[in-house]
Every structure is written in structure tokens, then in C-alpha cells.
Image (tube, rainbow, N blue to C red; front, top):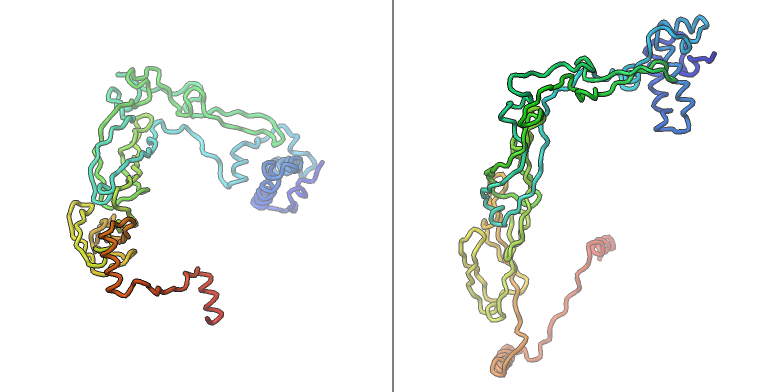
Length: 367
């Protein structure tokens, strides 16, 4: 007869809690899913715990009778295994027939102006709603659910069998009632006992100002109704903002590029720009404006999502140098160059741009 106390690594005076803790520790270490090569050792530990965890079997074992071979006494059930591993037994009893519906996620495409300033959309959805004929009960008029005669209303079927753990009790959902504990002999003819039916409905959705690509809008209770007429789920809208022909969004700011001729950059100009909200404003090009300069239009960008100030519109100036000149235009530019003493420009070279790590190295070297 093997020494079960030695197998679990406890003394003969060990309490039930000490035996349980020792078993749980060894079972986690030796479980076949964790250590496939320790299957035999795991069986020995499980067999030792089967005996020592039962006071009657332990008493017989201490008297010289191996409790694992003794047919009487209480079996070692699935709940005991769960208790040994997790400290509590697995739940029993039927599951409720009414269940919450499944959340749904759909994508909604928005123009940039709609995302910036908000809009309303009508969505057509194919979804499940509570059956109006049975009000979600799933039963035909004048009938009621009945207790399942296979599981007796428990919702599960229990099986007891002998194994290396001794008497092991397992539970499976009842195949007749699917774990509900009740059956519907006369289902509703409209929903076939499901408690809900598929339908198409139209939903008006308000899109708040300031949303952007990736923003999710939660519509509580606008999803499908659950099985058995259970509470409705939530509907989520995920925003995708379409590209705009003029403006590009970066956070709450809008960026655009303004191409101007060389003469406008030199002499200055005022150029109208229609903003995203339809307002026309003047972009002031000051004399001597260089290509690459940015002109901010403060407070003309996208409103913040949760209220507050608007971002800015950033106008990026691109000065266009003429590539083709006729004789008259060329003569005028030559005259301008002569007047500015720029016929043979000396030019000025500047150091190239250094990367961040190069500048950091120079700073440490004292340059």
C-alpha cells in the first residue's frame, strides 16, 4: 500500500486544509496539460487526495485499509475537483432562458464636414426584436412552459463513473431542454419559441460634432433583443471619415496648401478661401512671403468632441516658380534682376539638417 501522506508531502497529523493546499499545489504542477510527462505522478497525487480528503477513507487508510479500493463511502465528485483547484464548487442549476442580446458594431462613413460639425443619419437595420405575438415568452397563446422530464428541471444531466480519481461525477447540459430546465411543448407560431423575430427597422442617429475616424458611438439598448425576449444589446457605430479634396485633418486642426505665383508672394495679395463650414474668409499674403510659410486662421478648425474651443486652419503656402517664359516675360525678369543686382547671384549655402542623434552627439562633444 503506497504512502499517501508522502505522496502529498504532508505529515500524518496534517489537517484537511493542509492536505487540500498540498494537493492543489501538486496538481497544478503535475497536470498533464502543463507537464505531459508527469501523468502517472498526477494520478498518484489524485488518488492520494481522494483517500485523505475523505475522513472515513482516511480513517480506514490509517487502520491499514486502502481507501481508494474500498467501495463504500462518499465518492470523489467533479465539484470536489473544482473545489480542490479553485476553492469552490462549480455552480449547479438551470440557466435562465432569457438572455441579453449580442452587441453589434457597424461602420458609418462621414464627410469631413459632417464629422466636424455633427449631423443626423437614418440607418436601416436588420435586427431581432421581441415577438409581439407572445411578448417574448416563446409559448403559444394559452400555454405555459413545463418542467423538463429528462433532467427534472435541474438543467443538467449528471453521470457518475469510476476512474483513477475514484467516483467522478460530471455534469452536462440536458440535451432535451438545453440547460434551461424547462421545455416549450407548444411554441409560439410566430417566433417558433425563440421569443424574438427578425425585422427591418429605421433608426435616426445623431452624430455629435468633433468625431474622427475610429470614434465609437454607443447607442444603448438599440441592438438586438436577446433570446427568450431578453433585454436588448447595445449598438456601436464606428466612424470612418472620408478624404476631403482640400482639407486634411490633424487632431482639431485643418490643413490645406495654397499655391500662389511668384509675383503674388513678392507683392502680397488677398485670396478668398471657403472654409469647411461654408464661410468665406480672406487669406492675407504679405509681401515677401516665402514658400513653406504657414498662415494660421485661428478658431476656424474642428470643434472639440466634448465641447470647447475649435481648432485652427493652417494654410501652407507654396510659391510657384514659372517654368516657361515668353520673350517679354523673360525680358521683364532680366530687367528686374538687373535692378536688384541679381544678374549673378552670389547665393548663400547653409549647413544641412542634422538628425536628432547627431545633434545630441555634438552637444555631448561640446560643439
